[in-house]
Length: 494
Ligand SMILES: Cc1cc2nc3c(=O)[nH]c(=O)nc-3n(C[C@H](O)[C@H](O)[C@H](O)COP(=O)(O)OP(=O)(O)OC[C@H]3O[C@@H](n4cnc5c(N)ncnc54)[C@H](O)[C@@H]3O)c2cc1C
Image: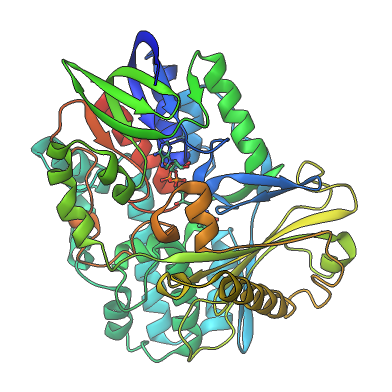
């Protein structure tokens, strides 16, 4: 192993996913000298991309959340001095077993659609009224930099200001689940409403309607209202756009540099990678908790252990089908994003709740002219993918891939009949490319016992070391990654 340089960076960011990289960019823009270590050949992590036969596929996240002026994404681009990337803002269709509902971005259209398609009794109206109040207050607070868990007086005041004194009464919902609230309106047996909310909650809070905290679920269920978009050219162009800016600002990206260990070296950190040793005054870690535990010095392991055991049964996986198809296979629908629930009574996952994301017509950065890139994703449990022989694995993979395409034909009857590309990603694929243990993706499943006040903080009382990533507050997704990256960057800039 060679000593790569005697240069001491101000801040080293471990892991080049959206959480860590966005933090590095903010800091670089503010004049700090930063370096990002990424084990894969390219940055992006679970919001990354791969290219096959001139198609560019998003490997996980296909949609960027709250990328509007004044939104979390908009504020990020303001902070780093770049315009928002071009893209398609999305309405999408939720296909329930007995009806379909357009999830409009426009508040008024959505207000009409939900009453028309999901019921307009007094209880429905009162439920949606509460949802509107909660989401309005907490989306605003999120954009105003509310910070949890509250671990000091300053954070308390900051959070109070973000929520606003007149809205403090909403704190009574802090320890309620979405199901608790539905029950209080006698709506817990309303299948279409419960079905739709369950899908949205699984996708955004990674949890069930019975366990997901109400406020987090309400925010998750309204992401499209907050400006859901797919970047032109998908995640490939998004990463190109922000990584070029980072480099222009003088930031250093070390791709194919796997962090092997790190330790204190006087007042600095010594970071060992497979390609050499580097030094930095401060570290922001965005490598998932369980992975960083293995690489950490003993004193840090002690700090991380409790959080790992708290969340050990709250992990989940994903399966994604990637199709490169002729335009004609998807020409029957105008909207490019769809979510499908097959059966109200079966457990979610493995196709029963799947998200279809298709590159926009004429987005030739995502697919060759006359073709479209299709990504179909669903949640899955991780255990069932463990300890399989190669032939068992291949057969299970093929079976689930075919099943997802078959379900997607509810929306696109011709889909996948003549694909140019047909690939299937499983938890094993995520493990291979993002290093995530047993392929656990998407952050911990959010419950009352591990979110908000109980979530993994960014500051764990280790000097010059902070955590970010979808394992820390506020959890999963691109919007959460930007928030947690910002909080870690604020700490590191002091
Ligand atoms: C199928 C799927 C669909 C999704 N859809 C959406 C969506 O539409 N919208 C949305 O907002 N979110 C979505 N998400 C969630 C979102 O993608 C993730 O929450 C987010 O990308 C996580 O970013 P992160 O930076 O916290 O973690 P990661 O992306 O996992 O980043 C961590 C990085 O660390 C690197 N790394 C690991 N170990 C090492 C090491 N030892 N040395 C150096 N580097 C290392 C990894 O390679 C990785 O790049 C989806 C997720 C999945 C799986």
